[in-house]
Length: 495
Image 1: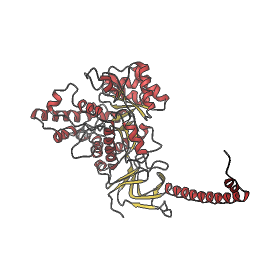
Image 2: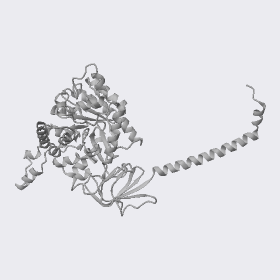
Image 3: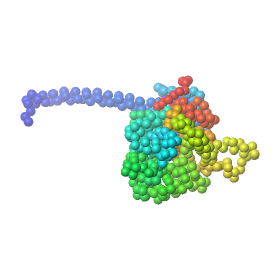
Image 4: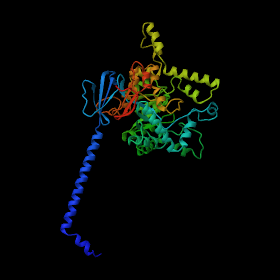
């Protein structure tokens, strides 16, 4: 195409120089604007906060630092010490929590954020083969995934408000519910705790639900689980979850799961840098998990002394889940169903069985002390799950296994109500706190990020009004929550 004379005349050297000058000026202005924006972003990222309180509890040592101060830069802890040791940088925001006690953000090592099980009525349970838990689980599976993840978002916010700043979500989240919820929280789109997500549980075909509609069985199961069928199938299941971007692999062990199958899961997961958490309740399943080299055993109700010894020698974590200890389910039944006198009696009997399993040993210890102390051979003093695990030297953490609708409580409040029950079962308060902070972080493989108020870790801090060592129920009354240097909740009066 021929260029018109007017346009060609405009392209003289003089005209080009004028244009170059304008372009240079424009580029300089843009550069200045970008530099200013970058500087402002850097300043925002490096915001400095000083949090002060009368006490700071270190769960590792049990030491309490008086007149404590934590200097935070961005989302990380920069310095920890006494108020007299740490100077206040110019422009720093100061948060004075007065006489409160600071602790690391709490960690729930075993939960299910995308479930909200409402216990069915007595007649419903009696007429459904799959029992109390499964009918609601099946309802969750067939619901819209969008609906479930919105429920998970609500629970995540309730968890954070209650002081739980990190969770390990171990299944019952659909195909990608917990990974997508995790990513939305990490991106700052919604509030919630840090999530270690497992995607779908790996199970044998006999686990959880049976006798489904044959035409729909596989389609239903695949929405919630990945089936293990031989060692090769086990490896493939791990790879499917790895593709989904999970942080941990969860397996439910039953009598039909072989050591070879679970060992294949562990090998494949470890190759990908993922830990393996195994739901194991009976002795056979627990042994399968130990022999296959699991990283943690969840529940472990029927564990033996010999199995605890094997776990200790192999460095396998025991994860307590005291959900049903005490009158938890009785209160749920009372709040959601009309009970017959027969069911009421059965519930009270079940509560007592749970107490016998976890056992409040305070009275026995007092009786033993009254009679001149107790001998190490006095087996009755170590018959509870808690006491036997403590005696064994096994590494342990704790989770709530929360998935239940508790009338009158948020999901977070229901969860924090489970932690003090470990103390009721004979665990010292400091060990309870460690189990949901420092050692929980180690079980997750996140000990370099969370679990303690230390330099370089995320600024995840909670505070309570009293002394949680003297009164472990303070964990149910968290008054201040900070996650990553950002205040989530503060009900402590300014000082």
